Length: 115
Image (cartoon, rainbow, N blue to C red; front, top):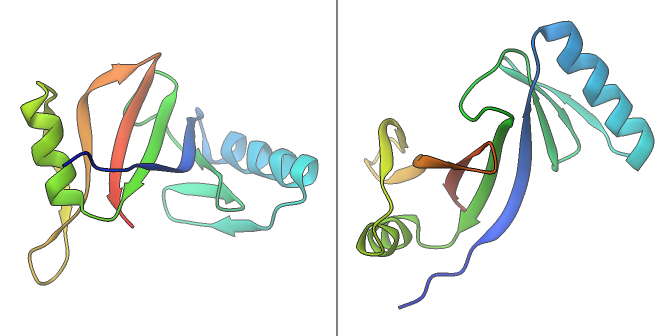
């Protein structure tokens, strides 16, 4: 079964909390988005996650969502793609809720999430 993916947001690495806040503020102003403050990042609407410190990916990450994360991960493994197991997060019930792929694409890590 071919799993469907949907772009959820783009994470942009910045060097500091101040830089993340300024970038999020700029993106909110340009696109008329509402800011949302987080522990590790500043969001500009649901589309841009401005990281307060560099994380995975030279430039940041791309978050992709799917309705069946465990099935999608299995399918991608069959296609030869790997995952960074140390990034896997689980629900209290033990179901996978997100994980990063091992490779970067164009300088971006890919974060796959359960929708």
